[in-house]
Image (cartoon, rainbow, N blue to C red):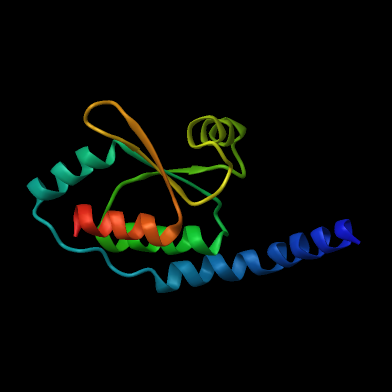
Length: 128
């Protein structure tokens, strides 16, 4: 019975995935306008960030929309398609759960932030 449920939800994801991606493209907000100097400074800060995600995860889509709204150039690492990213997430964050924002602080310390609302609040606080 458990395997039947698993395949049902996998099939559902396959059917819904294109609709979710199209919806994301159509509903992603325009990014904020900044001067070139401000944007360059923010881009430099974003080089220390990476978002571990799945393309069709609704919570990941929520974070990507906030990243787009804030005009951030954060590296997206697809854990579902790249086993190296999946292993890095497991070793660094301790669990394979998305979305997860990897933050490298100025002192070299790594922080692994889970939960879309927490990530969006942190991005908003840092960059808005």
